[in-house]
Image (cartoon, rainbow, N blue to C red; front, side):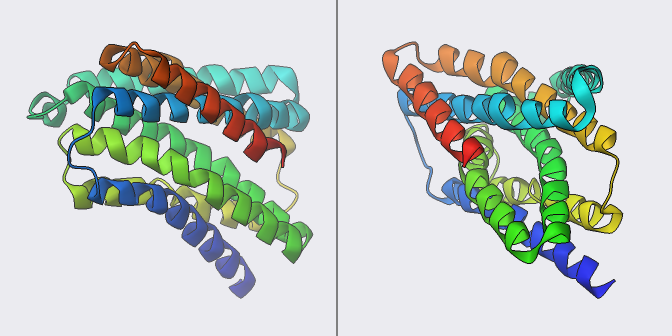
Length: 245
């Protein structure tokens, strides 16, 4: 049991540290041009698209096959759509004295990445179950690629009217599900591959809907120049590098 708790703690710390490092941007942002914000949103979009297409979905197909993976994807899309409808009528968004659409984008991104971090935590726990070195490698890779994802949460929240401290706290907490996932992965060891694949598909579906339904449209609303497009391309390239290494 002590070993399981240590692995869960490693997953929790790495998840919170990764997204929290990106969330530190909340303390440095006072005012940012629409052009630069569009670049950040598009960079995050490219990164998340690469992670979904080159990591989550292929791994889901390997784990549980196409049917269960697609069921997970559809469930993820429907879940974010339901959350989106709830947020449209949420009082704290309506009362936002700044940009309510950016606030909604930040919250939805946080939800999607929190869902994403659960199966990532399972990967960490399963990695430690195979070998310590593999577990450490997976943990470091995930923590590093959580940094720009944290930026994608903190910046819209901050510009949407959330205080610096709260934006940082919310961003860091999206990494907490990694601790739960790491415990599950280590405890169950031979966890059902169908379950893992469906979870990966669910995370992938939620993230791709956020990219196509929130991040990119919000970027286009802010600025229609070339810089955001370049940001998307750079994010896609970085995401591919992270996913295949």
